[in-house]
Length: 546
Image (cartoon, rainbow, N blue to C red; front, top):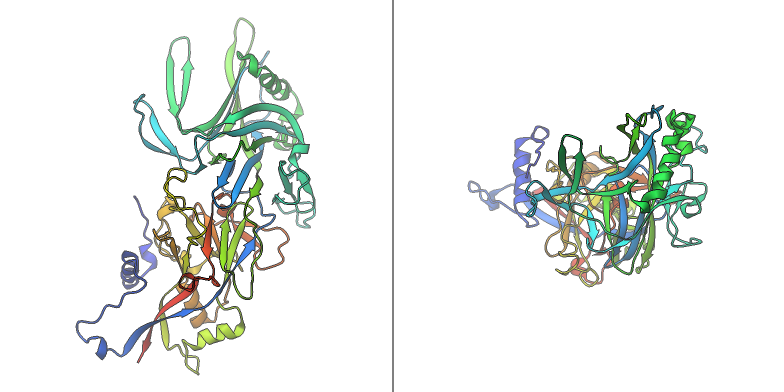
């Protein structure tokens, strides 16, 4: 597995120390001098544990457009309950003012949206093809759900008319206190929109849709040759003019697109977006099971392809017209949680912390709740004249799963349920990564093994370490701001983009975007946990002169 080490950013001594910390799972190691001996050294090494406040923050109305990718399907979280994720997306032609020639008639239409997938080997039955696994699939891949695709009739504008600077329009989730809890709602900041009240024609319906990791087999048959290609797994829907069941869908695309070839609606992007306002991929649960996957709508082969023939009756040729998924793409959620998520106790901290993706919950860590707490911390590392007398070698939050509440069995969807969980920490004042994340030299394309120095991985005992060494050093040495930390569950710690929280009345004004598209959740011991040995706490290891 390839790793990138940013060696130029660090002196060699620091990298050596870094490797020492990484190589060992102990909290701290003391290497005695073979020359002087520890008793003869003019310094000593010690540690302290600092109490902190950590509390729950319920997430309402989080931004659901401009996300890195999008969820589709139904997922029943073993601890939190069920969520159905749907997608509303604009589409735009790959080219405008297309010349469809004489008598263009559609042969077929293909909707293709790839999954994020990885090759696992050669297919046993077809050695020309590969076997795959879907990288971001949640739940039971064999489970089915209802999928319907409608034309969307609600116009998704690009700019916010209430913004004096005409900023980009943001769209937010709405999952509570709804007129019909089975519908998909959003907010544009000023009003709520129910997409089920803006349905166009029903183009596709499958009451037993299932995500598939199988390869896609494509045949290209000509008068002289036949070629077969094998593509990676994708949500692929074919409407064939030779299939009577597809007659209505074929007629829709013929009348809506091909027959408009001389119309101004196909002449530019603005005209087209107002004319054809997009597609609505609506999911519904079947029973208690389901599966949900991240869809790659930004892939080069994510599109709608219209295949048609054209020309005189005696001289017909084949051509195609491509529509891309672009513009506004929204993820909407219908939640049926069995856990009540609510704001926690900011003053005393909470016994239990709930990290839940989507429009769920996060934790806020307040290291020094009062100015007195902050000054007391500084005074421990400075003398009366403000000179630093102790030097922090390592500082991290110690976090434990609540073993009385989490599900961690081998048969949960074929694996230990929380085995690959990653907790992502960020600066909620500036909505940026922590200093320790920024200097973490361990990067990998695989998010499971990336940024393991600053964010760590989950231990087999359900323990996490979030390093904040540089943050504390910055406070002591530079009197920098003591910002609060946000903790969320993330399915990709490499992605640092954030999504806004609508009309926030507290410190949390945005959350990491990957949390918005992470359907999973976990439950942790808080800073006020009943089990004192597993309370969320801050450990600091330091060196001081004798």
